[in-house]
Amino acid sequence: MIKENLELVEKNIQEACKKAGRDRSEVTLIAVSKTKPVSDIRQAMDCGITVFGENKVQEIKDKTEEIKEPLSWHMIGHLQANKVKYLPGRVCMIHSVDNKKLADEIEKQFSKTDEKIDVLIEVNMAHEDSKFGLSPDDAPEFVKEISTLPHLNIRGLMTIAPYTEDPESNRVYFKGLKELMNSINAMKIPGVNMDTLSMGMTGDYQVAIEEGATFVRVGTGIFGERNYNI
Ligand SMILES: *Cc1c(COP(=O)(O)O)cnc(C)c1O
Image 1 (cartoon, protein in one colour):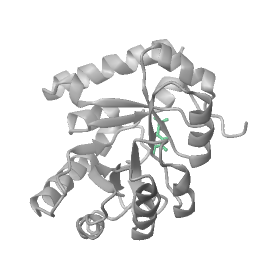
Image 2 (cartoon, helix red, strand yellow):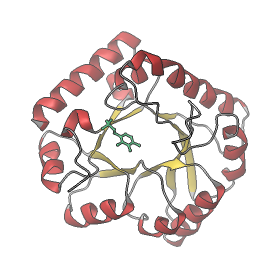
Image 3 (cartoon, protein in one colour):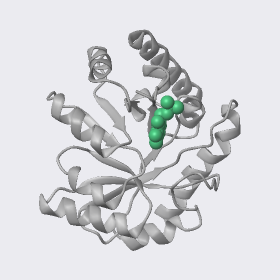
Image 4 (spheres, protein in one colour):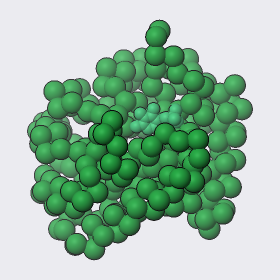
């Protein structure tokens, strides 16, 4: 089933790229494997997938210890500062930076191995109380504030759009995230030239691609429904 799902997702990505006049190579699919067993990850690997997303540090630890092949792991979920120490050497990007304490801890832990880590700033575009992330109004100042941390490479912005049955209703948030990135770039903060937009999940990744996503994070659409009770 994972193979068939991946074929469909790939077809949809290609269609969205075509519709938007974008090259397929501009969009990276992150296979979100959270809660799923290593056997599922191996099935996706057999189909050529090398980029995976997880939202819990413990799961990244366990899975990177079990799977030795070179893969790109992305930390996409809310991150507590006290867990950052487990990430150096394991992940290539952190998508969920939204407070100074966390940014400082990332700086501290990644400086130990002198690794420069790609990070995205998480923005709560729809101002949902249930979600993490900065308000769009606060994002520019925050980027400026953390831009001097030498082991953080601020690559762009990430958002988790509201859950909806109608992907079109999220278009405004994806458009807004891109505009926000452009306006922060226009501030010409030394060392900041963002080019990465992590937006779009199973329900809305085609719309996100049409609006400029460079990373889409697809879980259910590849691996099926998650069961949190096991
Ligand atoms: C779980 C998760 C996803 C994937 O969600 P699906 O709807 O299953 O595609 C994407 N991004 C984040 C941050 C997630 O936690």
